[in-house]
Image (tube, rainbow, N blue to C red; front, side, top):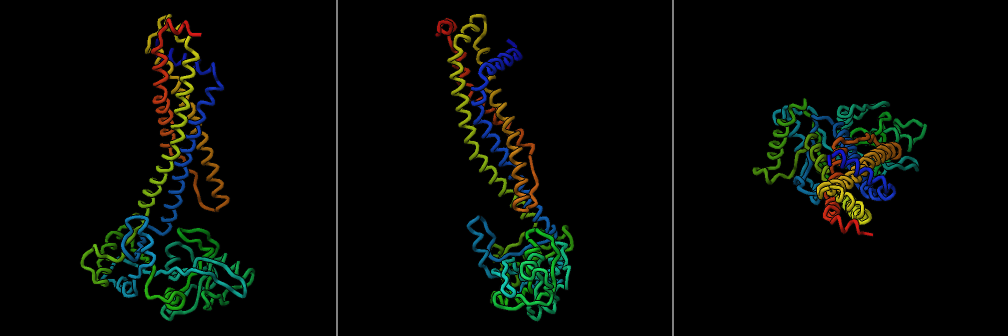
Length: 414
């Protein structure tokens, strides 16, 4: 019997029990569609985060305090580290130490709400430099002016706010020159960002920026920074600048052994690689969990095929009596299992892609995130390969049982 004859016979065998065949592949459909959905959402999340990271620009470098985290449990220690001081900022601004740096901005995060005459709003309040944010994200003050270097040196109580902050606190009234309250201290609004939404890691509509010196002295009462963000002349000078930064900070911290560093430097490329590794590992883990459904579906295929072998015992005996070999019977039933799971895989791929498209649409509409629909081609090949493999693995035993039947006993079976 040729392979084509075996395939034709397998399809006829499946057509004779359409309802049972449809129920048999249900577990395969669920498992494959769930894996496709996980991979598509993982790709979408990776694309979203990498786009946000890219918003900072390839020439941006972030310096963070504490030891570089080697695992998830180490990230908490960096939040409370106090190793980045004003002396580090001044040293980095000196051209002889880091000749390729064009901007250096200390940054602090100020938790809490802002208020104005009884109206309260919880924005993201940053102690920093407005000009740095504007040049890094191409978002410039639309009304008023950004605060100046003189304001920073004098610890001035001035602020630049986002459009949503202005709307929530002032409504249609003019906000320029008015005073908002942050942690009990009055700040005069000198500038307002235009409606911009999410850019990089920041939602500029909900952002409040105050001079980092003022945030450090009056709002937080600390003598250190949460991080230092620097920009180099170009992406090509990033690697050289990282070496300059590490050498400069080791000198200001009196560190001779790099293993004793109480700071770490992160480039945008490094962040992107970390994100890809984390999301890849998470997607693999979730897909592995979902793959349990495929095992369950495979067991279902094996059980149904065993029932089919029993029901078709006389058919098997008749075919053997007419000259079919054990190999012919084995191939026929094995092809039936593979066809079943293959069809289930195709349906699962289509269903998973549809669910991923719907999920992407809902995320964009409900969460207002710039989430792009992603459907990796590798997911298609994975879905087809896994479904065929399940059919092969779980179809071998029933097929062997069918091929071993004696034609005489099979013909006598009632």
